[in-house]
Image (cartoon, rainbow, N blue to C red; front, top):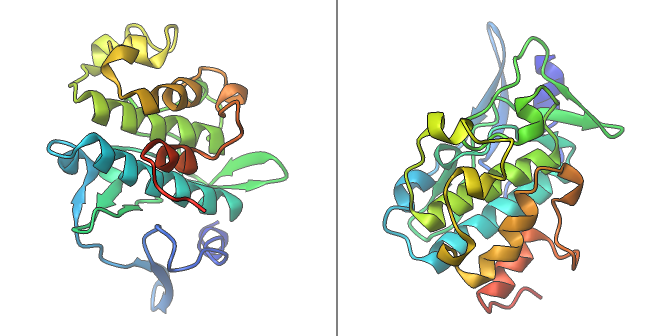
Length: 219
């Protein structure tokens, strides 16, 4: 219910790259208030951002997801519009309206809420009715990064004429050669149609793989 959903935010710390929030009890019930973030959506940021800037923003998003998942929450709607990039280039994950809680390895949506997401960024298993999971969040974040790096406009009708029968990159008409070398293994893994395969063979977390690819110190 709504109270349980609000309480689920308890384990998250304010300094993490997730929009800040507070719970207020008003005359008509509980309200979840979130902090204002100065910046622009990743959709706008990506138009002029360099590949390293996009990688840094994506690393922030994957790090936020690591904390969110550790707190037992699935975001459920990764998209460029739900990521805000500040003037300092730091990205924050916002809009948890479709978030779910994860308990004992299963995912249950908020009561009465229909599962959905933003077209082009929905994992294939969710498209056919499965509940969102941390793996589907990773798929969505990888899809956001792939489209941002490729700087292509994808026609949803044309895309869904091929996906999920075909791999995401093929359906989006993005070739590996058009993507930076440091992104290829990561995107190929996280955009796998099989959720169980959405991990790097090295076991490196996505955020660290991105920063390592940029030659940054992640110790």
